[in-house]
Amino acid sequence: MSGPPNSTVVETRGLRKEFSNRRGTRVAVADLDLVVRAGEVHGFLGPNGSGKTTTIRMLLGLASATAGEMAIFGRPVPDALPDVMGRVGAVVESPKFSPNFTGRQNLRLLARSVGVSDARVDQAVETVGLTGRDRERYKTYALGMKQRLAIAATLLKDPALLILDEPTNGLDPAGIREVREVIRGLGDAGVTVLLSSHILAEVQQVCTAATILGNGRTLASGSVAELIGASTSHRVVAPDLPAARAALEGAGLRVTGVDGAALLVETDRPDEVTRVLGEAGVWLTELGPVRADLESIFLEVTEGEQLGGSIAWPTDGPVGGGGA
Image 1 (tube, rainbow, N blue to C red):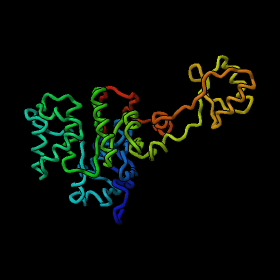
Image 2: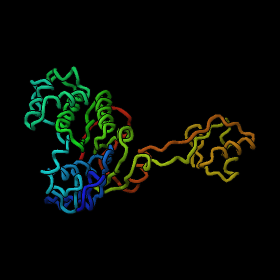
Image 3: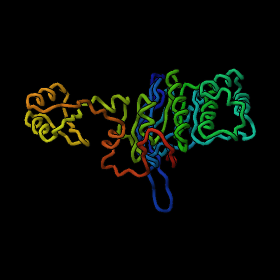
Image 4: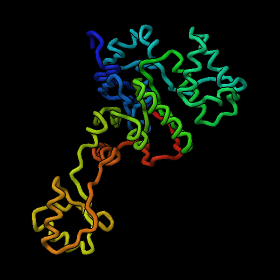
């Protein structure tokens, strides 16, 4: 992966990590290909234990790869990490802040250690939405505020790439929303974000691109819009569903199933549904596209993978467990 830097910010090719113990060898990451482009908020999606955290640790030089290649800003890592880390911010493990210092005091200490001005502290506090709360002691912070302070710490050096490993783990719904808004704002400001998560709805709400990981390897990757794709399924509601189904199938339209009190019809011509039912004398009370989401895409690409760990579907809510 040599050559001049381009729009690719993070890239791995054939990345592999094996762990050996008395019982043999376990493959945590298996020939992983990952591409994160400039300006993306890129979701790194997979169940707990699928290899997300291990991959991030290898990118940051916290773990060694068994095989494969990695690059950040077009530079091979880990060899070039000293040259690129000034442009990278990361929250991988719980940062160590002084509990009796205020959030601002903690940030000012960090700022001085990396040689940046207090103006950067002001900007970081504002970016993560802690203005007014930054003068409270860290030990009084809720988990969501602690996570936002951790992100603020990574912003002190104005990174072009931000790597976040399960940033909403353990947060309540309010904390999840707070962190989500911070990530969305960073993306809007042009920061490239690599966000690992096992919460599908979180990725769908804040990410512009995603890579789905399973058993340590890439199962699907692309923009969220590409992964979800254009819907060709429509939900049809009518008072007489059996008659509606008979009419639609008689006209050659494919009825793929029943969703509660509605039929699911595979077609890119909803006007044809209206015409067929009208000619059959069946009243149509509802007709609309069924939008695919990352849950359905994930289930589709992981079918037969027998994935371990857990994957979460809810939009908001506490989340337990950790990555791997």
